[in-house]
Length: 522
Picture 1 (tube, rainbow, N blue to C red):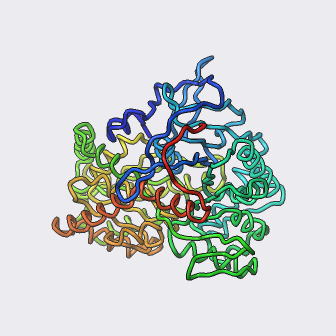
Picture 2 (cartoon, helix red, strand yellow):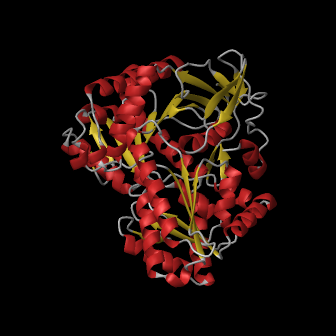
Picture 3 (cartoon, rainbow, N blue to C red):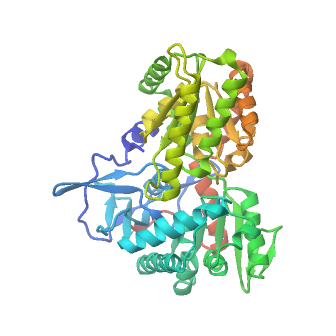
């Protein structure tokens, strides 16, 4: 995400610019005053512990041009969510750089450093077995309930263990008294237990950004016991929805034979109790709404609509991933065109597919299938200069993406399984006129919050077609009521509220207190 735009949209004067980032040569440890960070009842409060965030990928990528290098913020997922949190809170981020070389730690932003990034070393074999293998071909499909796509090997699991140990070692080397560790996602499920063995008093939380499968599916993982025990090193295990937290508790009870309390959301480990609870992930809603309201984005949205030449625009935005239901979405759109010839030459579907995991065979196959299906739909229905589908296989910056959000009349988001689906929330936050319609898969975590959307079974092409017809024919008053209600929800449960609720729970479970601001090491 373009942080220049974020700075303009949010009014912050300490966000770093991607053009202003340079490699830092300052000492690894510095002192900087911490300001107010976690909001409590609308009043800023300060966290008197240093926050250590750990994730598979860093929030930046290093771009080298000759002997020069610059740092650019990454787009999507953990990058856009936690970058803002650490910009506000200060602290430390431990992550893989995304390449084979291990850069020196970076202090950011330049001028007034607020946090440090320390990079975990991953070899070429680590990347192949841990990331492309165990994470992308094993755990990712398992977490999304797509077991036929699961591929497991002992070699890849051994690398997964090794990489988790490397991350844990860095945490143990960096941790200081009164720190708190917040681990992100399934790539690092073993880290909480590994760190707990060395730092028994350290408050540790892990947030699960993807779904969590039910016990019957979790049993497919050959190393299910080690995996679950790794997660149980945390004090708090957070999920997007209550159903995923329940699945985790059931796994702990039925696979590990541990005592659990569903009423309290706890796993009992002798004298320790691990809390498992839902914390629906929010977005920086103010950033998206401010950007959508800017004259430049409004002008770009108008140009997008004019270029289509039809009165109604339907938008789909996803990473190109088999969990996102992109093929099923196109089949539903095709059915809509079959059943509603009166809407021919009046509706255009804009499908934005962001390249993802191009080295993984399943994703390469999906790209080929999508290309073929797009060609089929375009060839079947195009007439008199009207093309029913515009397919964009690319990645947009924040401003361009929000322009598409604002230009669309309908967002069609149909994941087959999704932990949350932040695109749905971004679309809602960008509808500054309280117009438009959101069609959302009932299997997305966001469906529990955004109940005013038109919910759909993504496997049912006829139902997708019916929801599309309902959306394009919906009266403006009903659109406004539904969208305004969803925008209120997205603005209330924003990024700050989400991080506040998780850290407050971790504060209580880890028994660490909040107090006045103090000098902290970043």
